[in-house]
Image (tube, rainbow over all chains, first blue to last red; front, side, top):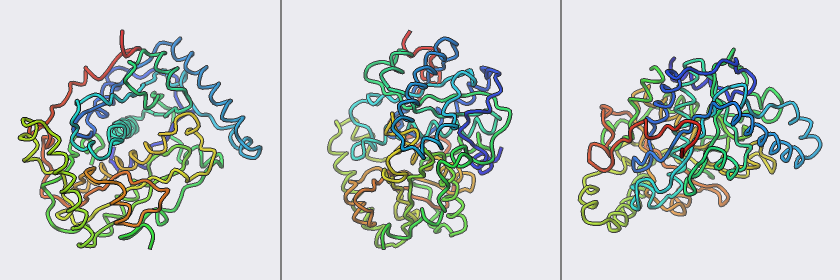
Length: 206
Length: 206
């Protein structure tokens, strides 16, 4: 699939997982795409924990459900009504979780490019995620990024070492279709901003 | 260009800018690709400041040169010798800088998905950058991410508001070729890690 087509077709998938578990061959292709991302000082500070054990998926889904309830409780009434029908995860229905982590110690003390901007390590991991996401789209595989969790819970669940950070839980699985409009637009949570508002010339403020 | 091909051909470009300044039509296509990225709560918290003024480019290049010297001075002797021949920017030769920023206030107080993991806002901006990077690759346009700067200097240089963070300076321009091996591997700074080392099953540590 063409790059621009994949960029436009890519969705954050929650509801459309087919129930089929992704085969290892395609999964490895997606992980290889992620692993081909750029990273600050070529540190490649990411790791990927593939979770397919049904019990682990169910335990994480339970935790995420509780975090969802906390968020709902924090909302004003009108936003609560908008939020209620929105599905925020497909942990069990996707059949595969990919926990993506960041190891700030990889590459030692002198990281080329992290000397002045430390967060570039963390951001490198996001670049790998977007590679995986676009590669998945081109294979008809859906990805849903779940961020309703407490890091300590997830680290304990999949045995992440103390010094390593969790960046994301990705639900990854074959889909029946990709929605044409993102869920948060369809459900009236938040609309797209015009490109013109995001682009500035020479200076941010004139 | 096919997604997987773009992922593999993409390089962090420093030396291969042709000197031609990117035309507005292609630049807009790349910015639209970036703006099509997913973002936490659909906040689209990014902005893009396009810098083509030669004087601004020269001033930023001067600042980056000083940061480079500071980093070189911090290195042990053997790493200094490896670092010296590595070009870390193409600010003036690319002809176009795209300053990418993150506004944590966009979307108000109740951000769907940032309730538990605040950094997802910042990471969303990196997803937009990777979209731009892959789209550029497919158009024969090079991108080099510069992170040798002090944020305050860059914010003042292009008038970024107080509450907005700078995430990256991207050098963007047509290239004569893409290197087949990343610069930091070619120059012996750091090699690629085998994919097998980065992938774990069910648990990070067994």
